[in-house]
Image (cartoon, rainbow, N blue to C red; front, side):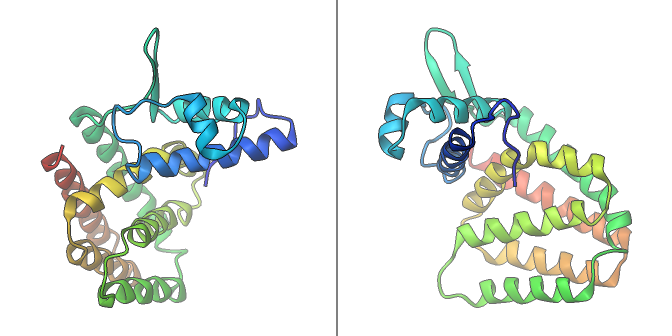
Length: 220
């Protein structure tokens, strides 16, 4: 899902840093630490039961992911969501994914699509809303489109953005309030992928991403 900094060479330190990174990232994505929330090394070290060193390294990585910011004299904070960043990110996603689709449709097999359709259908019939699973399935589908393009530059760019994308996928799901719309949108996208019509897929992708952006903006 993500690549650790090459600066981390000690295997034990690398493992602890990876654990710290993922746990803090999950807290940001799940809004357990909200926009503008302070990130204290001491508090996080106590919470995660580890020393401050891997916490510090994990925070450096999250800063590189552009999810947190260090304000001199004030501390380290979760970056607030802004309309400008939201618009920029979704514009880039639309461009990247529509570009990827043209090649990806030749490599995505029907069996893989059918498996994803079954997963989304199961979510549709669940009595309760499993937002974590919806976000995970959402991320898996969009990453599949990028990866099946076999374009290494696209994959590299998407990987650099993936932590930020996950955060916004969770915000979009939370802003929506009910799961029916997003499930139907993803089922439509999967069926279009199976039909291999790149123009219709791109139109569906663009509509889905624009709506996701608008859901977040309404709740900012």
